[in-house]
Length: 61
Image (cartoon, rainbow, N blue to C red):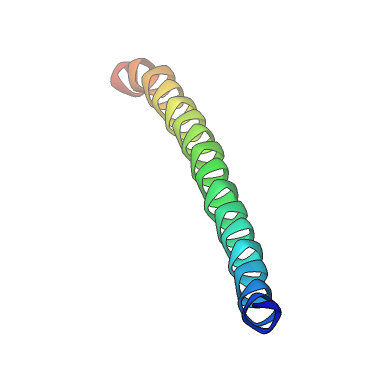
């Protein structure tokens, strides 16, 4: 019984470590995508503001 346990426990420990590391990657990727989406939305908002600010002056010239 002790031989079976000593054979099974290390792979289970490695599996648990692997799951923790992969989960950390997935969570970090999710956060990075959310942050990037906010940045892209802010850039697009500023571009839209600059277009609307420039449009009336361009039409009057």
